[in-house]
Image (cartoon, rainbow, N blue to C red; front, side, top):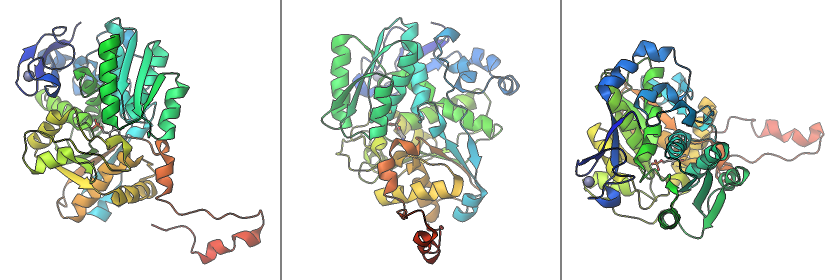
Amino acid sequence: MGRVAELRCVLCGRSFGEGEVEYTCPHCGNDGTLDVLYDYEKARAEMSRAGLASEAPGMWRYRAILPVSRAEHVQALAVGWTPLYRSDRLAAEYGVKRLFIKDEGRNPTGSLKDRASAVGVGRAVELGRRAIACASTGNAASSLAGFSAITGLDAFIFVPRTAPEAKVTQLLVYDAAVVLVDGTYEDAFNLSAEAVEEFGWYNRNCGINPYLLEGKKTCALEIAEQLDWNAPDWVFIAVGDGCCIGGLYKGFSEMVSLGLIERMPRLCGVQAEGCRPIQRAFVEEDSKVRPETAHTIADSIAVGRPRNWAKALRAVRNSGGRMVTVTDEEILSAIGGLARRTGVFGEPAGVAGFAGFCKMAREGMLRADDSVVVVVTGNGLKDIATARRACREPITSEPRLEGIRCLTRAGGPGGK
Ligand SMILES: *Cc1c(COP(=O)(O)O)cnc(C)c1O
Ligand SMILES: [Zn+2]
């Protein structure tokens, strides 16, 4: 189908041709996730800095290293090229040289997942598939539902019954077939896997389908290009299944090998204190991840049994990065902290990366000359109930001046 040269297992290193395997390594089972590799000599010729500068904004400017070969299989939604805001105020406050916020909540359905869905749906169309399915904590689902709707694919979605209302509403608006699973994300994942097997749907689960992570890697490519091909020292991102951080690592490594950037930034993965299987494996130097029961308000990273753990651990270890945890209180305070300083309103998991950055900075783990990128993975409007817990209450008043005199006594706005 064009650009893809081979698929290589992240655990055993065995190599497969495109079409030879569909999802994971037959020898290693579901833990053996695959890397999609390209003809980099050819890509190098197609992907010069100057050439890219004249491309239209959006993730498909990097199509030389994306696994959808035909332009007509790309849906007409503006995915990627999200803003990278520089915040001198935050940099000064936390004692680093430069700080940038990559606002992934600006994607069409409000999260970084759109990058993966764009590729997943493109692949499904190229393969002539009519139906596609995924399990999700919510964002992959809303994203897949949106892309499937405009493509005319039937989407079958499995989410935990507890998914935030806004995410479920997105699914229904796009008219996907939605199953609210009475259980955790893991239960939803297992049910979707059985259903995919039984009904022959295309599987959009990013922890299984190697092509999805290719979409997510474009976030890294953009960060580098938006920084004029200077890699930052650190990139912070929330970690659930591990696909996003695995995607960042893949993107930055490919740019190093294509000669577009000089070095790999350190990747810092952030998990919630109440659900930290990948962080635990990292600090215990384990080669495996042990499942946990998830307890966190950050629903998008409430993943007790991460699927892409091997790529996540590789990303952090090979980049000289770290895994850190943050408490739910730190996440709540990061929602307001980030919004009030930069204007970027993230959902709980969306700001977990920022909370991790604040913690690392406070603990003296960052240097005064570091340049840092924090990826905000999802939009705050995805989960307003949790956001409200991080805010002051409004006053209620009749439409008369008397009713609002208390505003000045309370000291006006400015609460942290
Ligand atoms: C999916 C998601 C994550 C975590 O990504 P993984 O690939 O599962 O590690 C973080 N934040 C948001 C908002 C997400 O939707
Ligand atoms: Zn293998």
